[in-house]
Image 1 (cartoon, rainbow over the protein chains, first blue to last red):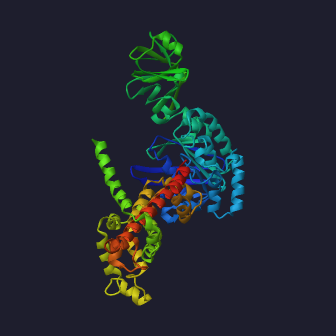
Image 2 (tube, rainbow over the protein chains, first blue to last red):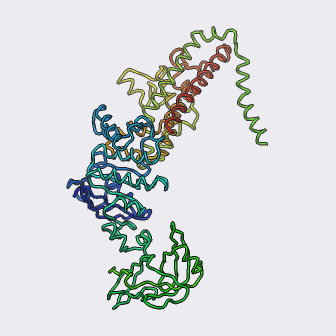
Image 3 (cartoon, helix red, strand yellow):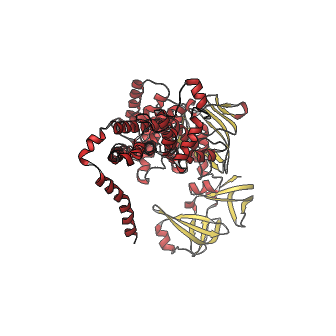
Length: 350
Length: 259
């Protein structure tokens, strides 16, 4: 394993305890709310924060292990970092920024400049080599930061919120660019983000961090389809309920009952996609096995879709078209019926 | 009301300057300036103040770095000691320096004389020492503030790129705090140039050796006021020239770097 880490760090309020293994060519996204310990985890891998316990190994070489008294300083680790806000050195030119790592590691001036030029050409910025970073756009700065991190040919690439500093408008395009550039790097990659979209676009695997602990991890599609915490559920926009299963019913903590297609037992999560929820003004007749009464408690506009929050014994969010909102006269405080087919309900053990 | 008081304040600063210019012996200005005692004083002032600035940088920057970055018990005490020369009377500093560095019964002065046969008192280096003593705090405080306000994540970025601490300090930290460094050096230099109390108390008042311009101004105010006024003007002119050239050169450069 290129990166094999078991990180234990206590820093102020934060008690971080995360196991993280990343193979060559694999991108793992560390996702979590602010203060969850994402950046601290990244810093501990780079050696900018030392471990209190656990171990960090890169290519089986121990970088940090308090129990054996081993600690390799950041400048000796084969780690490239793209920092949040990029942190390009403002007093150096773009070329000098990219050449900095090589010069620091003893490469001759001419060689360092040549290789820095090569990397700038790879990210399409060789014509901006002589300017100061401040005149570059956010996207260009990101590419320079990537070139600067990769020019020393590290084994591990760390990306800290690489898209957070960019305008929403340019983000989609730059996310694609970043994906292409990161794909050319053969080592292990760890991406820290609080945007699910970044994680989905860039990562193979997700590690969700909450309060310094791994709340959930696994392939991106698995985590987003079967969230195990309120945070992940909100991120992926899925209704997440928790209750106790018995036969074909799940009884929720609030007393509501959800009917399932298959028999269930024990503590379970219930995941319902918002678009699977239909809303009605009168109690619907016919096939749906799940029909719950409730009251509209909030309406969000999401592109061309509208999300209706329905409060009741089974609180759910329904995704409807603007037309439906008008037809049904949906607005705050209106009583509605929500219905979901049993086959649309995903149940999995806690 | 505020404007009126502000005008009084401006007048308060400008009036003495006008008085000085009015009193200046303009016709004999050049001759007076060329008198040996005047030339010695100016030369010595420039020389000593530059040395004092140099030593303030050499010792003051590391001290500022330690104060800003290292955590150790008694750090606030050290900072208080550093600031002390800024607030207490320079003449007291001179007396204190005397009992530390004079040849006879100086705390360290005797030892230095025994080992190297050198004494600070009554020598140019005594004037430099006195000036450094009062000037360095300005540099330390300014540079420390610069170090505290800089974004330290740049240093992390440099370390992650393989730079040793020394490389980070030299290629990242120092350039990033260049504005504070220059401002601190300018303040220290200005303070050294005007130093009077500590110098005359500690180094003495010997023409060509320790009689810097402020000392000469004070000495000649009674016996030869023309020299005193001309030297005052010279100090004033040097300050103005350097500050103006600094502003264009340094602060202009800083603005470019920040963009």
